[in-house]
Image 1: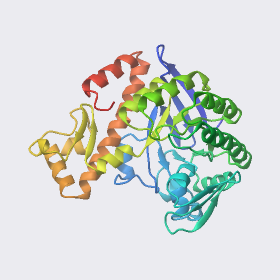
Image 2: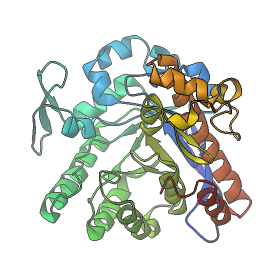
Image 3: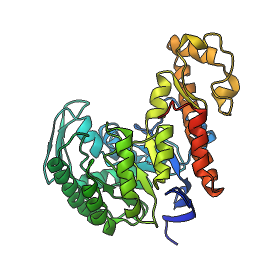
Image 4: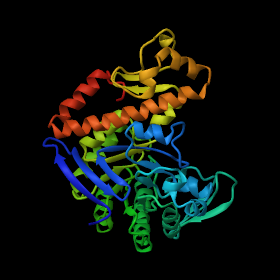
Length: 373
């Protein structure tokens, strides 16, 4: 039996939505699923115990940041990420490509790889496809990403095509270097906002798709309607036998619309980032807890949520914590937001199984008054 394999359990008759199970050495992942982001080998402000209680199936960690600090060699000596961060469920690592392009103080892209200066101390580094695979192998995650070049929204067709072609060449190098059968390598589809480039990228990527495929370069500043339009065109081109992972997407509406368009896996820092800043994602829409309207509101954040914050605290108390800068406020809202998104995905899976996904989506938007669109 393969260590990694995907089973499709149910396909929605009216949309691209589907339910499946991705089997990994550290446990089964029921899809579609949301993955909280643990950039530095921790989800900001949320303990692993609480992540499990929130029904988190898999975490994402960041290759670039962990290479910088504490160093992938340290993580390897600790026994890999699972032991280092005491997480016994599946972990996914990105390749560091997005951070090299977005965070590095300076970078120079060549066919060999990317030379860049660290955002930490300015030191010079070179990331090649082989180097990315070496780092990810040292980190020891279950699912790893190929090294790619992500272009920003607004990139020209020539820039987008060059980056897509380079990504394909780097993918072959990643594929040839990667020899660890305890890790599932996902290639990344690029092509920016050009549908023909996206189609070409998928076609050329297919020979390297064994365990799953990722879609990169969306949710990078473009209007949601454009992202959905591109995803509509991509849906018929995906392989059926593996999960599809839309990178960097995590707002409730985008999760629903991504599932509608055949996506199985999502990740985003949104849940914890907006939580730390005082915004809760709820079944009635966004709650900006700082607002004066909640000063004397002694009800839970969300009447449909059973997370620790909703079972024990009121909006008035959480507003107080956020407004006085107490860290527990951000911790509680972060935990709530992750719990909410995990429950949303569980509800989506149930709706697909019951042949009512379209109706579920309509009811969700009606209850939230369009605040997530």
